[in-house]
Length: 266
Image (cartoon, rainbow, N blue to C red; front, side, top):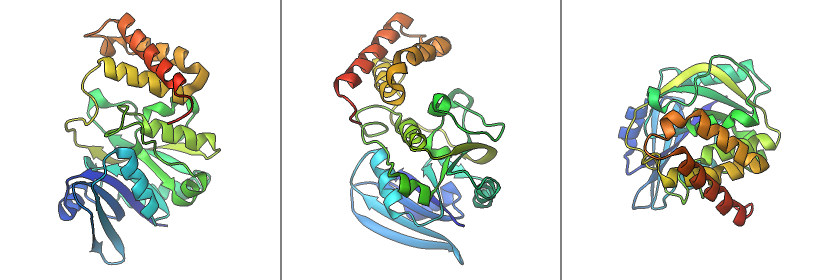
């Protein structure tokens, strides 16, 4: 088996991306820029084929889907430009899939700054629908065969460059699991995130709460409001320093209502 990194970057160059991310495996890199083009390089004999595709399109969901269309590896590992991989990450990923042959997807640890951390995996166990919203796409490693069979792609409505701020990774994971595919965690760190300016987060403001309400409708259906309240009350110390809890609730409710009015489209 071989691992192939599927990375989304912006206005980048091939050599700098390979060096910065410490790529040591095959990779498809989708470069969002102002031109069309394709480059390729081999970073080691027999391994490390890097395909670098430049497009003038925008949106994280669109770029991840473009990478999926071009994927050839047995295991697809989603990534971004701010991820720096550990030496030997390919072997670590393959070892987990060899250990757990039932897994269609395995979620790994990516080190992030404390204030941005939403999870830290300490044991191997199945992922459930009620806690899948905490994991980002850069922690996903998925069997390509299972991914293609599922027909699941990333939403074009959510994420950087889209109408709604974020959540494309949560929707992707939820829909993959709804199709019956098995997802597990692994207490293995394969890389770290180098913090930079977010493309979507600009504080806990009206847009943040409104978009989160829209997301919760698509993620949880009739449980949208109870889980929205759980989210607000569990994290109110962080979320409600500049706006009241009552206001945040109202904005989330408005987002949920907007999603209901638009039906099941995403």
